[in-house]
Each structure stands twice: as C-alpha cells, then as structure tokens.
Length: 437
Image 1 (tube, rainbow, N blue to C red):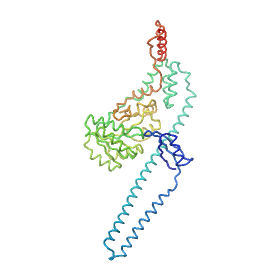
Image 2 (cartoon, one colour):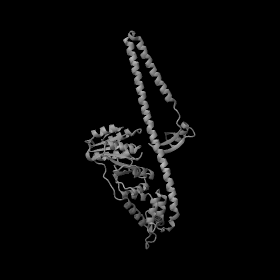
Image 3 (cartoon, rainbow, N blue to C red):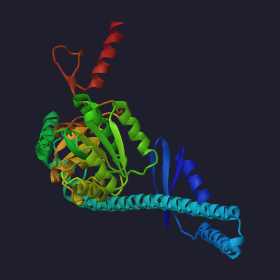
Image 4 (cartoon, rainbow, N blue to C red):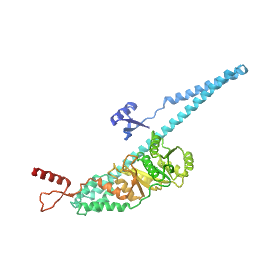
C-alpha cells in the first residue's frame, strides 16, 4: 500500500478526485484542513511503474550511443579531423551532463516520496493510537458508570457534574473531579474548589522565555512552531536588537515552509538561515556563535530523530515543546511521556480557539513540565504571553459553558431581593418596560 495526498476546495470534491484517480476501492485514511483547503490522505495499491523501465532503457540507449561514437572515433585514428574529435567530445560531455541531471532529478523525487511516506506512516500510527485510546476510555467509562451515579450528588452541583460529563475530559480525571465536588451544596463554591484543586495539582512550574543561547522549538505538525519562533525572535529583536538574533530552519521540506519563515523573519529584521543536514547546521551554529539568541525551527515529522541530530551538533541546546491547547491525549502523551526528551519548557498554542484543554491538564498532573509561553492569536505580529497553570485551568472551566449567576437590576418585588440568571433579568427588564409604556 502507498499513501497519496489530495487537495481540493471541499471534502466532496476531494472524494470525487480520489475516486477518479484511484478507483472505487480507494481507502480513505484521514482528512484535515490545510491552507484553506481540504487535505485527504488515501491508501492505494502499489503497482510496478512503467516509467522506471523506460528510464532505465533510455539511459542504456544513451550510453550505447556514446560508446558507439567513441569506438568510431578510435577506428578513424589519425584520419579524423580535429573538428570531428571536438564534436564527439562535446556530444559525450552533453550526454554525461544529461545523465547527471537525470540522477539529480531522480534523487530529488525519491527524497520527496520518502518524506511523504514518513508523513503518511505517522498519520496512520496516530490514527491507530487514537482508536486504541478511544477503546480504553470507553471500557473505563463503562466500569465507572456502574458505581458512580449523578443522583447521589447535591442538586446544586448537578449542573456542574453534567457539564463535566459532556466535556471531553479523560474518564480518570473526570471521576476524580466529580468525587471532589460531589458533596458540596453551592455551585459557585464547587467551581472555585474545582479550580483550586486543578491549579494545586498542576503546581507552579514556570520557565523564562528564550532570551539567550540556542533554543529549538519542536512539536506536532500544525502546532504553530514557525509562528512561535517568529514571535520569540521579534520580541528578542525589540529588546536587544535584530542583529543579536538569528533563526535557523532545520530540515523542514514542506512546500512553502522556507518562504513562510523567511517572510516572518523579514518583518522583524532578523537573519534567517536554512540547514538540511547536521553538517550544515554545525557550520551555521559555529558562524552564529556571537549571536545572543539562536532559534531553531524543527519539522513536524521525525521529531525525536531531528532533535537528537540538533543536540549532537549543540549539546547545550534547550528544547521546547509546543502543542495546541486542545490536543488529544494521544498526542500529548506521545510528546511528553513517550519521547525520552528533557523538555526545557512547554508552550501552548491556539489559546484563543480551544475550549477543552483537559487532556493537557491531565498529562501535566501526571508529569509536570515548566510552562513558558502561550499564543492567543493566529497573527505573527501579536506577541506570545507568559503561560500559567491558573490560565489553563480557567480556560478549561470556561469551556464547560455554565452560566454565571448575577443579581438582576430590576426585580418585581422590591421588598424581597432575588438572585436570578442573566436571562431572567432580561425578561424582567422587558416586562417592566412594557408595563411602564
């Protein structure tokens, strides 16, 4: 089987394109949004490709033609004119040049196919891990449901328990939270106890933003590594000057990745360099030894392998992990627990879009990591902010969607003040205005 990538404006067109190219039996692996379009990954059977045989036979014909001309020139010997010898040499040189170009194009094509293969394998592994995690969560939820019931909770906190049950919270964490607030009699008190309990479990582990030395930013594909590098470079350039900061793009072969980071660095006046192999990276780091801060943007595939290569080139490197706030438990566990990397800090992106950072919260409770930066905007011009455990917890609790109770400005009975919801207060205000008119 071989994985193929298809881009289209919407999912229907991508599906039609896949069926038209690979037939009705094509296997759809995943779909996602990329650069405003729909990206579909499909698996197809690999058949021997006729162009490979044609390329081989063509190379043999060219070699045979050159060899025939060489023998012909030798047979002529002294009778051959200088012009004929020059023509034969030029033809041989041209054929050799064409063969070298064909080899370079073939190597480039093979490298591109290898990158697509690695990316496809990681997508398949991620899907397999996600399905396995879902099965485990489902079995655990069934066991918990047999002995935990919402009916035993106080009526005041049942809305909070129901919101916890509907949120995307790992079963083990939800069970602990429900047990913690089950016996409380006030909703606001339960929410505050929930916040304090989570904040205490996370602890106050924080790290300074990268300001000096060599730092690598790593994480899953699409987590916002390049944007975070650009934000950190801009902030350092504003403090210490653009000439003291440099950015290196390491082994990122995505289409448009190099032009994107060049454009972002140009906006802040920071030098941007590119290294595709460890030898080039080592040379660049030695040339940038006088820079105050060097930031390395890493690819979204083969993260552990690429980081190990960077560490071998620069043992004093500080590695920082960046993940989206709403990353799944499988993704968070793969980078925080499974990878044997000593992360200097954790950075979180998409704080403005995410409402369910529960998987990240549970993983941080199990394995504390220093928090450093967070991005609240998709714009590179908006700088990163300091990330705290309290901010992550507040984001999770806001995502539960519970309405905050408040005191109405107008009540029907002035002798007896009543606490009502915002909806009730609005209804009372409308009715009062209607009676007054």
